[in-house]
Length: 364
Image 1 (tube, rainbow, N blue to C red):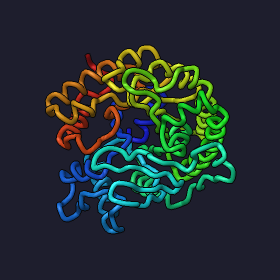
Image 2 (tube, helix red, strand yellow; image 1 turned 45 degrees about the vertical axis):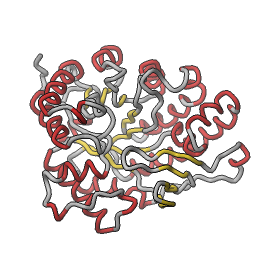
Image 3 (cartoon, helix red, strand yellow; image 1 turned 180 degrees about the horizontal axis):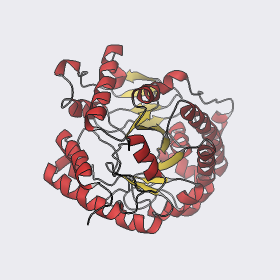
Image 4 (cartoon, rainbow, N blue to C red; image 1 turned 90 degrees about the vertical axis):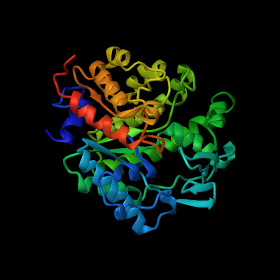
């Protein structure tokens, strides 16, 4: 059984021969850190943001990613969209939609200003349509890995809406103070997401991982009522279109997502990622929802993969597989992504342990 077959069986809540190993994202330092185990030093790119890399350096970064996906025989890999971003100064950049982000040496850039400051800004505003160059990573991964599952990581209407507003707080306040603006933004961003989705499927994406956190550790970021009113109908449109096009779609969100999981599954999502261990029990989620959705993730990347030892990682992987994998419908990954703080040797230990303990039938 090849990796693509393995992943697709798990997404369909069935048992493959092995628990599939996949990751939602790696960033530049993690690609380089893992890549040192698989390519010569002179083939590694410099350790700097891809935004600042020239063409040759970007090719080395892509080559390093391809090398360790092959070297570790990962079952799946994820393509991110490459819409252009432009550096403004040492700590800020602007994307193709006009959103300004603050950058840091670690972590994801976060929006600090957006083009929709008030409802009147929507008049005449047009989303930039997806362009062929945005899908370069998807094209490269699909061309290089015909027998591995290629996911497309794309923004959802919630995240796109709040980035256009310049901050999440503004959109959440709109739910109370200007619900019409919130719905107009959901309509606008969902149409963009539908275009992005269709082109990704055309180019060979096997499934969609929809970004946009809906929760933090204590609870969801909005009430279930507000989720149902301002997000769920637009999520349902995306899920219906993915299914019409013949692929699965999974929802990513950090935090305690459990109060929203029934609504997410009602909207049509086929999987939930990453079941963050600080606030969600993957065994409990599998028992309650495993007949409706694939579960993905759960290997702690905030402490264990950062500060733990390879032996501790191995033990955690064994225990996680024991509770999440029986019956199928489980894909192992970190509890978010492989970020700069993750020790490469711990990631390698995670993959090795998944192969050691992930053979079906799962033995207690």
